[in-house]
Length: 353
Image 1 (cartoon, one colour):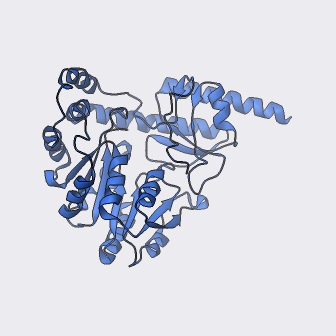
Image 2 (image 1 turned 30 degrees about the vertical axis):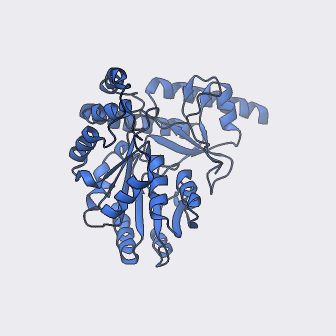
């Protein structure tokens, strides 16, 4: 995957709606925006280097000890910090998957083994994944729901993976940045297992759920004190700005916003899936706030000409031209996109006649 090529590049082109970044369609909660505005008066001071208020609020929210938490300048910083802290010699990645895992592992000289999610099997993680976890493995990364496919791995298989990782002393890093958009996050999250598995590392972020990617705020939960101390040792001081810390504290109070977001995403995901399929696109079942689908290779360019940015996934390892990802947005926006796609399909049919 090309380095630093992601969705959300709204700076290099004109557009109407950005579907390439998977951000909460409701936008940032008013409480978060208010906290950011009010924090402007505090930027004359250094941020709290220990992130005390935010760490306390997070520990209460996640029901974990504060010492299990490591905060980062977005989840990406924590992925790199984990790899630099642990310096794995060999790691396992499932493809297609988020590029930062590979980039972080390569940066520390790690050798990578691959597990391929098969299209004909719905891009699911299956039982044969267990065979890839061997005694010479040091670390693995899993994303649940997976990015870019949106597919979920059930807790039964995750439990078997965790047991095998514990047996072979493999650090199991599970990225749950999209899990709060699923209908029942507790049915898929492994967070409650952390006290049982000291080698388990769970990654989360404020970015998607609270629609605040511009502030950069992520966190990790891990019961291995040595690992968390090593991570803090490789991150720079003051890595969480004053506005980000204040926004994080405010976001954790937005309980009703989270419930409403989950309900909106569930309803709009179903409508958008139906709309895409009615136009002839192959759409995979997903549990996140985005959809993964298949279409003509030039679809992203044709959408951009009409003002709609969608994520061309051809630079994901394991994918080729013709695979795309779009965010789930509001009903009005989704109807606009579907109309644009209908127009594209109509023109394509006319050209082929």
